[in-house]
Length: 465
Image 1: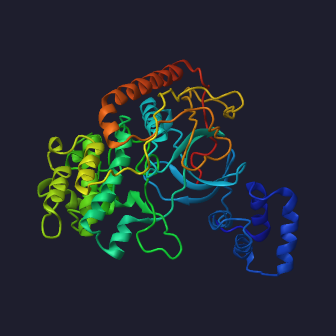
Image 2: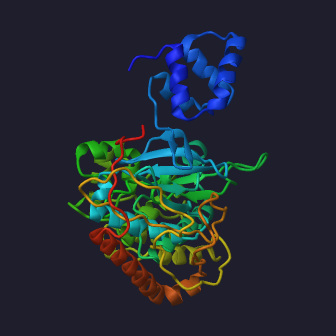
Image 3: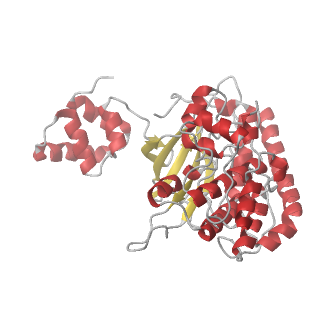
């Protein structure tokens, strides 16, 4: 699309909704008085310098693209690369002024019952998970006929880049960090969910405090929907063809060999394999089995496997834990990430928990109709297909409060357990979680079949960017 002339550009700015109509005239006068020149691109840069537009918004408008830039209460600020058919944005929740991460789901894929059911299941587990290392998944919402997931914005340096820059960690530090990561993934496993996207790229080191030493910032683990494709059901790595494999890059080093089989889905033992590979990389400084490109790396993992570690660089008992976690045969690995965390805690001689244990309230369903004071905005004229229901989640006590409008008062979440309590309660906890999820999913299917929660959706725009 050709670049619009200055007058057409100002018209696009007015139509975008990004600038209040009452202030548009004064903006134009201020720009004229500044005499910056530069045509359309000069106007766009001037608006960016004033903070009126973000660089991404200005670039799109200068390219003649009208957006949309607004989605319900959210103003889209920037777009990021992501896997699959969704769209990932940094956004601002206008009523509260808080910055969030917003994942826009693909409207046609969400019409498939198996895809929508998978999204609901994983959304429920991600929302209920409370380990503070995990990125927070706040809500599944709908506006203007589009469904999207609102998440905590997590910023930092990927551990892959840190290892390249600073080298490996000492054995006990590596074991302690891997144990805390495993404890966070164990929170998902205890809810009958999987992470399915573990790698060094899914781990970010938050910036350290001013003047603090390297590696003092908190490590955070990105989870659903910020890692992998949330539409993929069941969760599995993108290895369906050569093109998908080529895009993996070094993430190929963390894919369990059994996941290369046709239609294989991720499970707790494949997560344990990836955790073992993360620990291996923390100890050596490089991803295990990496051969310079993904295809050869996957072959190396399925035939030779990660290099065996041992003294003098790695204590023998820690090397045995790594070997168990990365075994080719899934039955040799620890059954869950919680079991791997217990083994690493025993090696370190300290409990590897990310926050003190808290009493666990009873599990309650989270799939329900919205309260009357939080109506779902009406959708456009229905398609022939019936729409699927929206999952309304309420956040009781996130580490940082969710944006206003999320209604944090209506629900309850489970608190973390100590290793001993988790071992005692693992089976009954799973039974209750499974029962709650089963009841919620039955409600979703029934609502979809009977059209209780809406008539249909059709967006005038297939994609937002």
